[in-house]
Length: 408
Image (tube, rainbow, N blue to C red; front, side, top):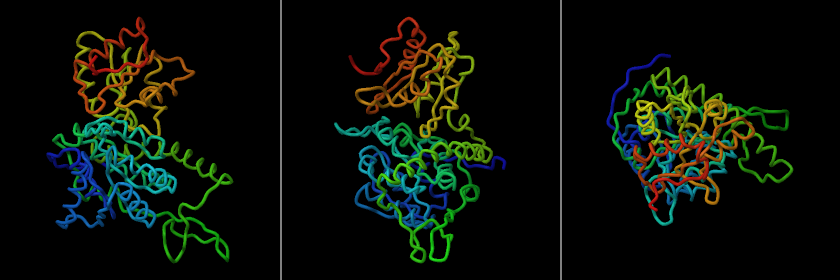
């Protein structure tokens, strides 16, 4: 498969996601509006109204209901999508675990927004980080182009018979969702061919006269139970299935990324992490999301000043990309971690995972920089000051947790 002809469109991140959904042969979209996600479902509803897409658009009374409707539709064999942010994601929290435990391949876009209170509609990552343990694959986008690409890949990943897990695609609220960008869009046929239509796998079920194979979906002719009572006699075995599947999903994430890269001409590192001038660097800055685009510019500036610095953007946060990330970090002098969220009473969530996976290995000095909460700006000057602290880390390794961009 080779890169196909594409059209450049002026789209913000929300519009880019909606356009990807339009092209992906989605059967059901269930949604409730919340800033800064609302444009996504508004655009999709317009596509439906104008006859540009053939899908069922379900308007519900809350985000809890939006994901619940996706659960029912997905269990019935439909390709499903929804989107939310912050407080809406928190209201879905119960259903997040149900979706992943039932192995339903729902795709959801998250417009990262600080959870309230006090009320804030701007970006940080505490909303999606609050869902990091819910059993969903999590992919973080750097810009609108990647948000478009990630949504298309997400359907292939989620529905692969060796995965069957829901996928969240993250993009920073307002910084990506509402910022106009040139987005290279594949033609409808190419996307349709890439994602195909949802194929429900067959499973064996006990029958009166031996085993019978039926589709793994709700069907009155062949009744199945989704979400039965599951006590201590079997619960752990079912959780082990999720643990093993999340590990095995890495192979599929890689395969889908590489296949899509050949189709579109766009690679995002190895599909898990995207290093920038990291190989010969002594000092690295690691992070998620839109900030990492600015970090690359700062790396270039500091390289011109003679500093051996680089960066690594983590694209896939769940499953955690230990195999890709640890080799990039362990021989460095010092590494700074940019966290746009914090586990109150501990450290930033990305830092915690990196520290855990470096534990017991010879590794660098590791410092956590929490920044940008509630949409606070992270300008190049502040990123440059973070790099200078990393460079001085051998002299000043403490404190490990440093909050940047806050007024004193």
